[in-house]
Image 1 (tube, rainbow, N blue to C red):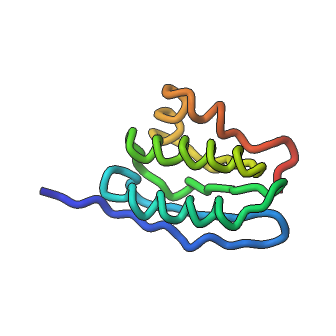
Image 2: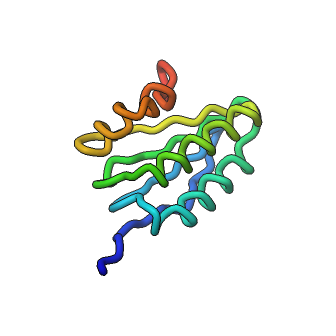
Amino acid sequence: MTTSQYSIAIPERQSGVVRLAASGELDFAAREDLDTALRDAVAHASSGWEICVDLDKVTYIDSTAIGVLARAAAAARKSGAAMYVINSHGLVREVLTITGVLERLQPPAGHR
């Protein structure tokens, strides 16, 4: 049995934006850490803030992680913040596109 390799950077908070960067494989093994990081980001994002999730170094994403992203985005909207993903590419972008999640998590025009 292999274990997934991933990392989730502690969110940076600055001037209306909470940034979170992930890398590696976002799957079932990463779900708790991803969920915790996103919950923390949402908790610290005030109304009008943006939560930016950088997927540049993510090589794989499964439905578990997609569900975490979708729930976090809903929680962010509920608190008046916007959440989006940036730098998705390859298989990750394809999976997010096919599931319809990428369209819902596009950065706003002129994002920071």
